[in-house]
Length: 184
Ligand code: ADP
Ligand code: 5GP
Image (cartoon, rainbow, N blue to C red; front, side):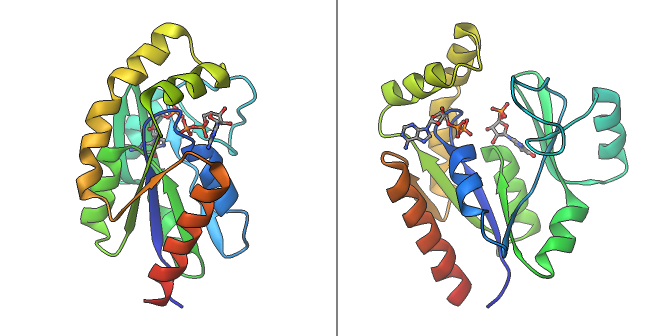
């Protein structure tokens, strides 16, 4: 079976991180760890959730062409290290959990990449999940909710859209998509 690049996107709080963690528990699928200039949230570890780097470092890596894609949102930079993706794809599948702009950049560079958009059952539920996660202030949550429409509008460019209502069902559906694409 061929090794593929899967890209998971969706509004903040929809459950991308939760899903990405579960689907990369296998030995044959690796999660790419992004670089970011945002500060770690409580419980986030450098090298595990993100590589937390300074803005100067980030800009210097852009200049050196070290990112497969990068984008700026909520005032911070986020980028996918190119070397990890290239090397890992030689032996395994790779999952990227990145925003819609980054995903469209990836599709340009790797047309065979499979784009999966995760959407919430309702905006109210999305808000509840963000509040429940307890990692952002109400202002930051409102900022993220304002971006939801923009992100959902991009789902037409995605190969698949999966509703994350029941977590187990969403994971099962995404695993099904991955198998289907790999055996195609
Ligand atoms: P994202 O990575 O998209 O910002 P997270 O994976 O951090 O989102 O999930 C946001 C919150 O929603 C977390 O507290 C997570 O446990 C919860 N969550 C994820 N999926 C579901 C689901 N299907 N039903 C209810 N809560 C969920
Ligand atoms: P958060 O701050 O909640 O961890 O992430 C904010 C947004 O940045 C999410 O939509 C997430 O998918 C996106 N993101 C995380 N890493 C990357 C990356 O490497 N590239 C891009 N383009 N977006 C990313």
